[in-house]
Length: 591
View (cartoon, rainbow, N blue to C red):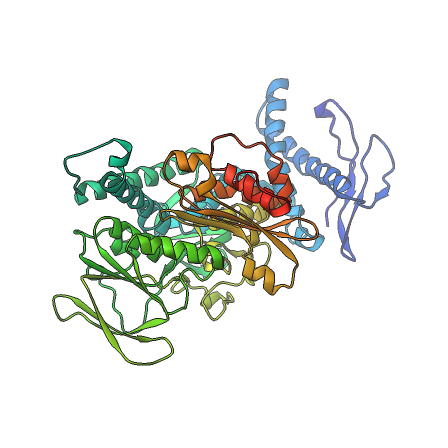
């Protein structure tokens, strides 16, 4: 409770009497009004605007006594007085709005005494508003956003370079190699038909790797620059939570330090999922990390797992000359993909000489000889067979990186898969501990982690964040690419929803035909009664770019007719999406 009476504020060129009392009564805040020489009257907050007004009334009450204290130490002229008060108002308005934006009970957990309020002016305190453990896409984005919202922020990253798995050994280097290998493949197989001829084309693998490393280096340095620009403190080391407000860090320099924070965000990402009996040495048996740094092109490459990563890395080395065989336990590649698109995609990869052994499991590995020998058998059981390879890529998925962080010691709840359980505000069951990205349930995608990070710190700052996991796009960056958002036809059918499907092939798209790259299709699934778009699936050379029109459409609950009636530039690949939309609610023009 705070109660002040008859405070003279004439120094601000007006004279008020404050009679303010805050108390908690049945979950409601009560405030006595303030006015010029009036008897106070009780006001109950009626809505957001009333509540905001009352917060600023309380703000003035907190600031004015501080002003008297400052005036006793320094002599201000009128301009200095205004500048000082304006600065205080800005800083304290933010703190009050943040602390009081939640429920009344939460708001009153904080002390609004003059002593505690003055702590905000201290310069020697090491306590952060936000501490982020992990500098990957979720972590570094959360740190920058927190700093932009005025929160004192520290980011801890064990790798020594920012960007996490995605930037260092995942998304970025793989896309660099996918592009370089595609250029080589086009030069060798397609340029001649366009009138561009070479006596010979060869691969300079060291130069290709150097280009990849240059891209990674420039981007990691770029994030460090963003940290400096936004005043994010960066600590290089392994962070472990020792209390809900403290993180012990073993720095890469061999020292130990403790970072304190009011709010701690776990953003440590994920790690490669291992398989029983298979030891990854990153030379002959590699994870995606090792597959990005091979010193020579393997003659035979076996990929265990037909998911996004396995197919992308298989494509890289297949284009460069490897004989690629994909072994998959499930009956289909990329199980989350729409069934019709999946079948076309697999046929496309097979035309690129990628072989598939589906419904097959690896039961043994022998690395004693010159070649790696894999023992295989049908997933349902049966006769064993052997398969030899120069390099084996283990790409059976990823697991949350939550072990060794000290979370179990402070009581943070996790599920059987090791994922941290959070509520809609990304808060764990331990006050002050939050989690985002791959360590929580949801798609393990870098862009999803980024959205988590922004939403999480918005909640911490007293704002409202939001991420809809049903509208997170997924992309396989092969050639052609496959991108999707929303539900597959199989998912819609299982829900019992009446639906319509519209499709349009790129063979009928003028731009695709003009550039001689017309393999692919656009497929739209929409609710029959309302025409609301439920899912969009694209297989095309640049599907990862085309999908975002569909993402926006789903975000605004658009109908297929909405897309069909929007003018699309001609000739463009995006016209295929328009035609598929026309096919969904009516009829397409060009087929």
